[in-house]
Image (cartoon, rainbow, N blue to C red; front, side, top):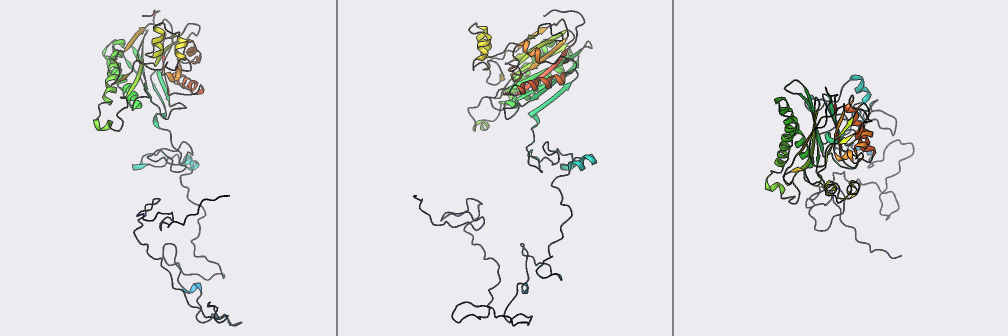
Length: 441
């Protein structure tokens, strides 16, 4: 069997013993300065011993001890004749009287070793959480339930990475609730939502939800969705109590959200030098407002609003039309809805919020349902697994109006059970029975 030629052994780094090349000034493994000559290790001189072996053997051997003398031959030194040092160069403590060959100069071992993190049972008994900086309660690891989480998001006890804040979010405000989850395939959650409730000038209640889906092909989509949802929610909560009509308020909220996303692209030119071909931050938006007897929806993009009546015998309905390639093909009569949404281009959006978007055209519509039910506001992370109104009606819990947060969790779970290929965000708004029967407006 042929063999590779053997190379001469390379010199080694005096610090880490890794091989180095001739002429290297620094070790490639540890960075040690190879031009510095290491000091010779401190050592005791070799002691000459009496030669008792055959003449000319070149070896000095200690003279044999006379039988029964119990002493040490002259010129022979025992290991105990020289003071010992520990690994730090400090003198060892003097030996105590002990049995021959046994050392007891190591400190006595404690009966219990201190744990790297507090025992969770003890913490539970004491009702305390490990203190963080400035005495603030520290976050406890979700994996071992004992270690403190450091500023980098890792447990100091088991090293487990902790979930990021936006990986799973839940929110409630009055009668409306929402849940957002990263899903099972994406490395971060690029969705965001805002829920709220307020009072109209006539004293009537109003509930609202805004859901935004970051455009993954754009830069910083998570920041875009967060900015848009927050600004839109703030505009609605300010406009509705002033008496602005809900449909006009929702239009203004979408315009303000678009301006907030556009502002994210206003960064120094030097900030884009490293990524000049990236698109500006972008997201979609969809919102709903529920007042006494009136339901208003507004959107840009492909997130949706569904109406699901409490009486499941009545038909459910999708209240929005996607700004997408598939919707355009269906509207133009070039494809059936099933054919269009089966195409790989189906989810290419034609409308979004962002500095590089086409002319902004917010869509708004008002409805007057004649019966109680729930309004589902969601991203495509959910409706990919319940696309038609009938399918959505089947997965919405029967008690959704009474338990909106639970229902939002169930719908997110439905998407995760289906594969969780995308971020998923769902808001559920109960629609109470109108004071009088009403028809769609």
